[in-house]
Image 1: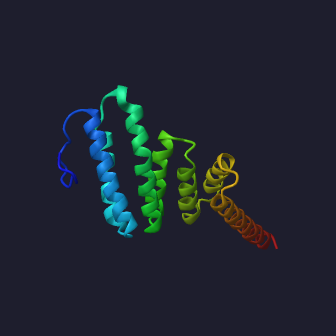
Image 2: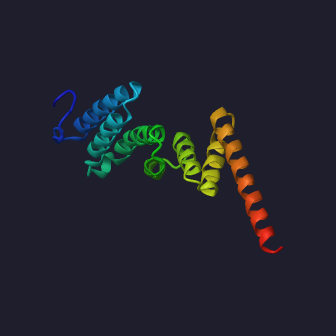
Image 3: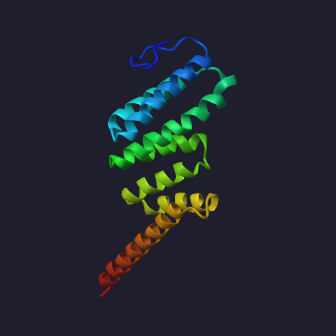
Length: 166
């Protein structure tokens, strides 16, 4: 097996080989991420996910899903840094389908949803993240920002409706 898995060749058969190939590719993505090469990092993380989605063996599904979580999380972080909010949300949706209580996934999806102005959904995610990690400063900060944004929206709506009836 090629050490960098640069092509899209299928790794040698067997779940262990696929897991090794996917992890190696994910690590390449991490290297790109560290140098702020977000698009290249996404390519590697998504390639690792293609390898992990190659598994058709139910016996190894849990092991493969466990390896998908950091890939989806990293894809989401890259998309947040690139300000591609919907793509970040979609990566988090896939992550949270595997691990519904993943705090990073909830936080990152809440961040994307806030930027997409989907405040109610963002508030649900951040409330769940806060329940799971009540002392996390980043979660507290985002929860506060969402609360302020929500209140501001309510005040604007109230003002708009009031002027309609005057």
